[in-house]
Image (cartoon, rainbow, N blue to C red):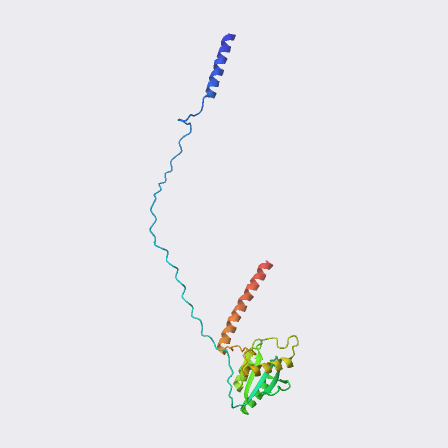
Length: 228
């Protein structure tokens, strides 16, 4: 019995060894199931024939507004000239007057109404009155009053007239002398700016008011968002 059991165990081990050593696949067969086919059908279509790319259309030119001429002086050689250099302040105006090509007079203080009255008087006496002032935050009220009184008024951008020495008397004197040389033909002395009409000025103020309102709303919204 012992020999039979040993032979049976040996046959069982040989069967197990043969089963484990048998390859699971060869070059022709595989135990894996075939992969499912893709049910989608792809159809290759030819690309449409496209001609050469058309050049992009150039944007229509925007018409520019007509160029506005800069102010120029109108000189009558038959009338004497009176030149005023003005340093404008809120409460008063410092003016230096020069008659013809004489020496400038001493600076004097005027109110706006007094200066306009003097200009009206000089124009009535037969003088050509020319005025120059630097543009500032007071607008063009004085300029329009001087023009209505009969003077030719010019505004320039603020410039360093006397370097570090800046006083009302010196500024008005230098403006008067520059105006005199500019009227004599030296165009490098002054560069008058164009004065907008009252309609243009009202439109600018309206647009600026809308911009300030929008900026105020945006600032309030930013403050609320920051406080939250």
